[in-house]
Image 1 (tube, rainbow, N blue to C red):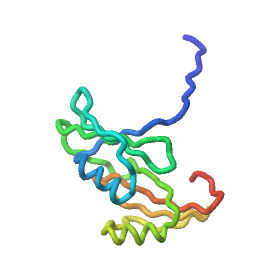
Image 2 (image 1 turned 90 degrees about the horizontal axis):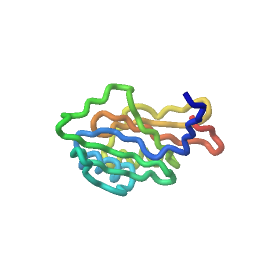
Image 3 (image 1 turned 180 degrees about the vertical axis):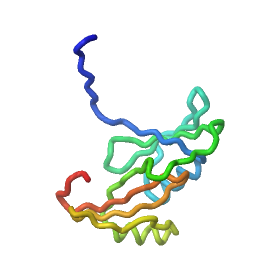
Image 4 (image 1 turned 90 degrees about the vertical axis):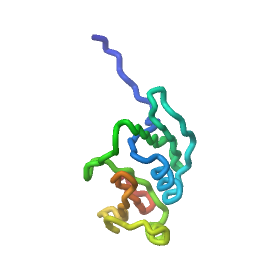
Length: 137
C-alpha cells in the first residue's frame, strides 16, 4: 500500500436520473432559469443533459434511461438547494407560474429563509434567501 494522497480539485457535476427528460428540462429551464449546455446519448443509450446554474461552476447532469423504468425518489432522499436573491419575489414568480410551495417559508436562526417546491419525479428543490455575510447553511 502506498502513502499517496488523493487530492480532489473540485466538484464538476452531480447526476440525477429522471423519467421524462423533456419534462425535467422544461421545469429546470422555465421555472428555475437554468441553462441547458449539452444534450447527448451515451454509448449504452442513456439520454443525458448538462445544465448550468447561474454563478456556479458545477453542473447538474440529468440522465434518462427508459429501459430502467420510471424513477421513484424516496421522500427526503435527495434535494437540490439554490440561493435566490429575494424569497418574496421567488414566491410571487412561482405562484404566477402555478408552481405550488410544498414547505415553508421557514426562517432559520441565522436569518436565512427558505421554501421547498417539487420537481418532476419527486425530487425536492430548496430555494434559500440568505442575509448578507451568512455562512453556507
